[in-house]
Amino acid sequence: MNPSVEIYNRQRKLGVTPELRELISSCCAAVLSCEDFREPASVDVTFVSNRTIREYNREYREIDRATDVLSFPAGEGGNYPVDPETGRHILGDIVISLERAAEQAREYGHSFEREVGFLTVHSMLHLLGYDHIDESDGDIMRAHEKAVLNKIALTRG
Image 1 (cartoon, one colour):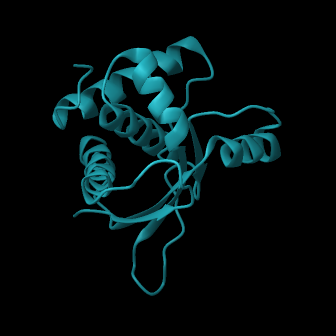
Image 2 (image 1 turned 120 degrees about the vertical axis):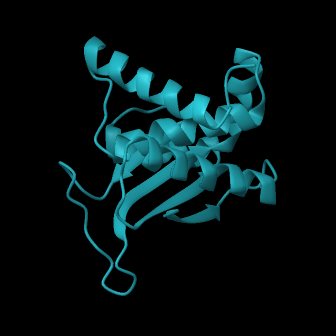
């Protein structure tokens, strides 16, 4: 079952095409499939500017700089609130700076779509409880990211 993915555009620097919206939805679905998450689920994705994500990063992480993506899990330990109207498990919120994603795509030499897809996959894994605080956790998370990106043919090329 595909998740319900609500996408909000709160920035004006880059256009948000139907193809980009479909990519985000596909990435979310691929993560849930690879992670064998079989419950109906929902996630909100918001596109913002570097200025806005810097404000969020300062407020929620006490880091005063722009970042590429922030994850706000709604649950913990595999337990998520359920929307009583839809029966969907609310996984949380993803906030992506499209401005930073474009900068990183140029920096890493791959497409904007690949970068936004990677950031979505990365953030979805955070919503499901993965982290990269220490090296071994980071290795596990990177392996899961790679598996999802391979599944949807969104490799570095």
